Amino acid sequence: MRPIWNGTLAFGLVVIPVKLYAATQRQNVSLRLLHSACNSPVKYQKWCPACNVSIESEDIVRGYEYEKGRFVVLTDEELEAVPGPDAHKVEILDFVNLADVDPVFFEKSYFLEPREGAEKAYRLLLESMRQQGKVAIARVALRARETLAVVRTYRDRFIMLETMYWADEVRQGQELKVPEEAQLDEREMKLAVTLIETLSAAFEPDKYKSRQKQALEQLIQQKIQGKQIVAEPERAPEVIDLMEALRRSVERAKAESEAAGAGIKQTGAGSGSSAGSGAGGTDSGIGSAPAGR
Image (cartoon, helix red, strand yellow):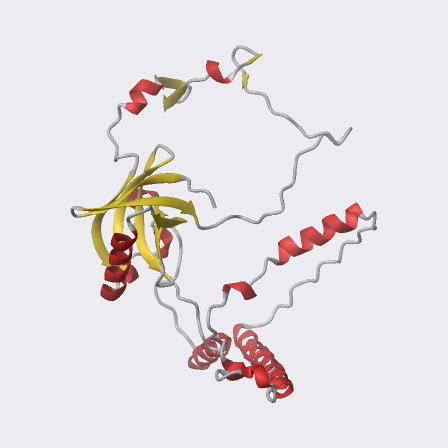
């Protein structure tokens, strides 16, 4: 991985030189836009509709639309003079409980790596936050934009930075019509709780796959191989009442759970006599959940 930012992580008078790395990467299937007549990739020009001409990057300035069709132009010098945080500093403001920070505020995740000579201070901050069960609220500038961030531990090994939305960027949803209270049937409530309990499991991110991505990749390969594609007809949804839907869902979840359990037992029976099973046996990876936020 290549660092996208070099700077310092500061709390109090302690300054830790660090590098910043992106912790996530989209794995989408990339599709290009083509001209249907010749299948050539489409290119876009920067076009001024008022002057009816194509323009170059050096002819473009930035501005703010303060009224419909009216703009005030801001020069690069004026924008650079706007006060902001140190461009190479993660400034810790407060330490808070992670449970107090709603996930709606989280935006993007980054790894923080200590630079040479900063390993001890890095580990000190990591262990201190872990023992106290705290995360840090910080201010940082990334790509010329000031952002709020959470600095937290990850897997008891890394310090991570999560960029956040500001409070005025998070919608409150006050205009949405959601029920404050409802008359709930006790039988429906019991079935709903049973369904949740039956479907409860340790979080294992590797078991969740994008069915859309897999289907799209398969479609692309079939097209490359010249196979004829036949779309499956859509099935009309079955309309059933809430109680019946809950009952069927519980039955299906239990059946799937029992089938999965039978598969694990069969695998264990086939390998139980193996000398290489070790002290942990075949259950060493079952029931353990990776460390979360």
